[in-house]
Length: 86
Image (cartoon, rainbow, N blue to C red; front, side, top):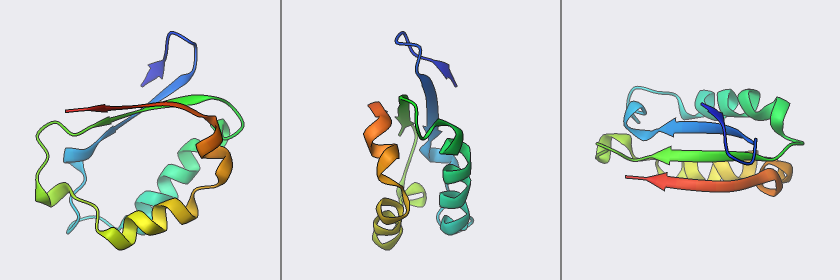
């Protein structure tokens, strides 16, 4: 998505594009891990856009649990800011 004013890479997640019944959540987690891997040792920022979302875009609880287990600690340590937009 670009860089922040602090010159950190910014990643933008658009929640309405995620359809729980049409997408494999394991593959999404894998994609996110691969995308963030080059940035795992550097500060980065995240924007989560919930505009126009509904129940079709909701993660199941078991996938959220898996998400937090799969993400290495360095991702949480280097996440400088998380902006939630609605």
